[in-house]
Image (tube, rainbow, N blue to C red):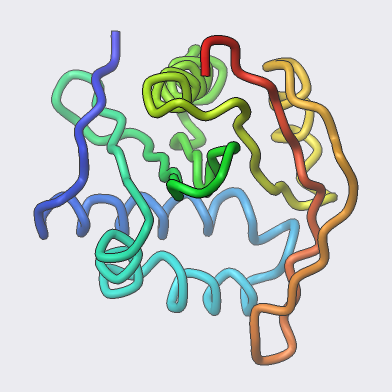
Length: 168
């Protein structure tokens, strides 16, 4: 059984950034290319970027197994919304298929319920077929395309996925 640790300390932020570097370079290079991976890591998943996000609306959690950080997730919960955003959900590639993604998703859904939201939503790259299949298996529905300019000529070409959460 894995455990979740709320990220607030510098060492936890550093652990998230290290995981991001490993996971993004393994998983996303074939999908979006090394240049965009580097850009996104620098701008959205560096220690500084994560600390800035935490100072804002983001809540990060490390997934730990046997004391080792093996994945992370981030949610954005704004009081005036009825739906909570699952901004990030990542597990090390060598541990995929062991149920950790499911545990992370169930944890995010529980946060959603506890905080009174009616649904959980996320975006996923249109070419990230494995993750899209996982989200569909977890009960998410594709609600349509989302193309977002993220600067320096890069775009996120995604689908928005959404799932109603009972009890929210």
